[in-house]
Length: 391
Image (cartoon, rainbow, N blue to C red):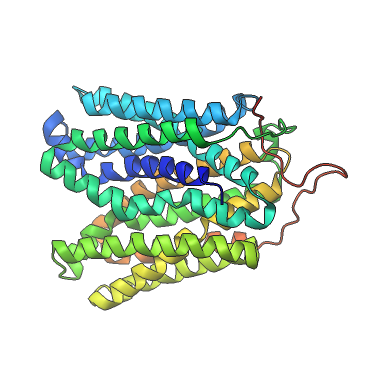
């Protein structure tokens, strides 16, 4: 694997930490900026929706921009957004800062996946995508708990300074180590891509997975605290277990994609995630049962990402960069809708949220089981084409 893939993974670690750490800082910034806790939660939804919209729009208008330039511009905007968040004197300016960081992240992450796919041979694509995406589960394991602890100990602004430092390090590494990738401009715009039934179903799979997950995940701590009798240390251990399981699932997903198949690996991950979430309400009274369910959930959910991105490239070889941006948008739309959906049920049915989330992921599994035929390139064309070229 090229060393530059590790730098791209570091960038995703910064992005993942920024997206996840805010959940542990809501109470602190609510008190500091004098806004109700419920209103403070809009920073999560605003970030997710901004990411979803900008990933599609910017992914379409930047198709002729060299990929390395886009990586640097995306990380630069992301860094500026987090710097502004660290210095924000009011909640309104914090929202604007989070929007700017979401725009930068939406440029960086899909392009990083496309560059990773182009830097390796097709037989290594699954593992390359898993390596670049490993920053997200690492952020779940390390970034979120570390950022939350730093925020609680030194103030919520310091957590954003941590993200600024990480993104600046990744920026320097990309500038020094990531080589330009020769790629072909897309022949298909994004609105034509979504009219392809197979690709649209694949995008809906990602949207439904994260809709189901974020129906449950934001309220998992509340459920564990009230229904299992776990103390703060036990709850933290469960969250760390989820993140560690995600690391295993991500690595396993990459290897199975290369050695087995992307559709089969995708369906296996969805089945594990759905099954674990459906079992979760039945084991909330058992610490060991909860631990086992969360372990399987984490493995299955993060196993999905490498085969999903590989499948996107297979289904849209003529515009894979734009298609990867659409995939990222689907992910964040699901995340943005899942939290309020779970919140609407959590008050009266907190213990049953796993049934709702697991049912949604089952729908994703049914869509993933639908047979598809990848769009094949014309004779003489390369199998893999990324959506814009380095000059």
